[in-house]
Image (cartoon, rainbow, N blue to C red; front, side, top):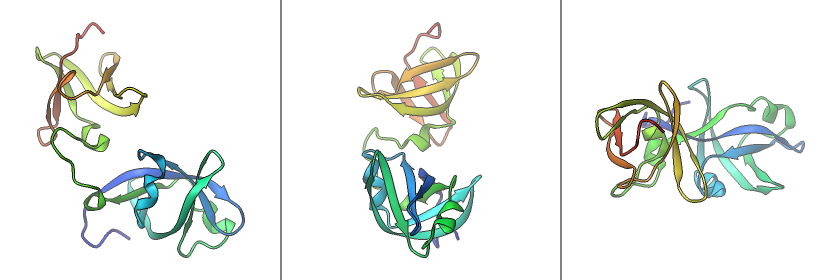
Length: 172
């Protein structure tokens, strides 16, 4: 079921396995810190971009090296197994508001990337965290890893226009 306000959803993780026999699931979280995923009580479970279920988080905690969760109505291993591979999303309206030059990764993915001199480098495929800063994977004629540091390497962002500008040498 889609959320009642029809807000676009934002992926925050995925179901990667089952835990025990009482319907608990293993989850991979894309939030920072990882257990921030548990601050959202209502989850949309999606397959290939389509919402297959809307569920309420009953409990969540660290379990071994990962995270485990219990969902309302999921009471056995077979039900939990049927959720494997689904993406965990929440309505965009549930996310904390951003300030200043902050962006959610999902807002940058897919944007066209140009240098300050107007050279087309491709588009943002995805981002990942290093300890020091986030890094954009820009795919064009070649794949480039560009630090996502607003004001230093990222000089302009126009999410509505579908592009961002970087101070980056195209030879790298």
